[in-house]
Length: 315
Image (cartoon, rainbow, N blue to C red; front, side):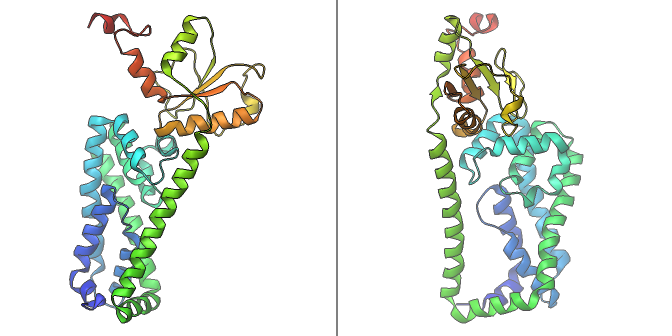
């Protein structure tokens, strides 16, 4: 096997570029460790730190500009798709939207440090039509903060990094196998975490949209709780609620009140989280709306739906 350190010295800038590009494109291949190693080699004058940071910025800008453009074109649908395949899908739409709506494009300054928030934040920038010049400014600044911190960390601890590289070279393929095993274990751990959360929240009963509509026609009107961070186009009469807000502030009526919670996230995770809290507090007639807001909107736009608007029926 070729000497690993020699390989990094010869092709370090390109390796950093492609690693960052793949990570920012959405693959679970962390680039931060390689940036730390590159920083250690730069401290030993074996790599150029300006070249490392230039490659990091270029790769991030290419990938994140694509996410920005996709956010402008596909918007909320793309957010949902990303969260379905994310290792942090549980409530990731809600958390990222909440953070972005609070601080705007400034979130890009720290988004790369937040698990699962990098691509989602750039999609939100496109979805909310942030000016591209503003997006690029915060994107470059955030990438320099993120990449610069890794390079600085590597420079400060370069003796330790050198020892690790030497150990990997000494053990050859076993060293690379060890690193690959660590990465595989990390991904497996996150997948198991996600599976456990989804499995636990599956115990909350789901209410199909057509059944909710039949309740409305029969005069059975449940309390509707909207836990989306951006509650635009809500279900009629729905109450916007923070999923983490204390239950004491909610005026829900007696414990036998029918309550339906909905969100816009995969597997109704956010809605099921609040429904779990409500059922534990004694509100046993609580459901999560199956398919959430997207299912309700699709049902409403079906021509034969009793919720269809006159425009929909005529089309």
